[in-house]
Image (cartoon, rainbow, N blue to C red; front, side):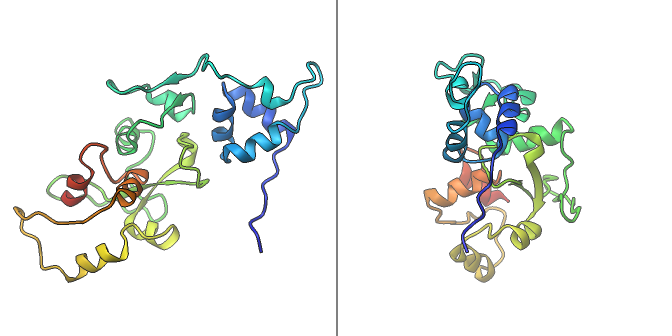
Length: 208
């Protein structure tokens, strides 16, 4: 049986258009793919102008849309509200800021786990996007899960080879270096769940 198609009504589209400034942002707001969004937006006609909703919401010049180009941290509220394009922003940094500024609690959203490591007071939590859309960073789409709940309800954090190494390796001394042998796909996966820093992903994971 195929996956059930999500139907987007004209009213839903019009409401999303009021809250966003481009078609891409509108798709993220609705939590659907851009292709799925454009199919519906092009099928509905605005009675006053005779144009499709897709054409009405075009913003190729990016007017009114801020983009994060690096450097100083961008406005957190703008990211949370979906007003800021965040493709190049570090997900792990976003998670830390949400916790530090009190927008989300530093605990597992499923089981409430909130224990911290003694040496650095880190809590092992991963970001999960509720609607499965990893480009929808709106605050209502973000939740934190502990490793156990992420494994139970979402999927594996590590690949089979890494799990095998973890289970078979002798205890690691503080001055030893763990060879994770990660490829770019695994590094990207860790970044997507807020487990890796952009610049030193392998070192960061080795320190966990």
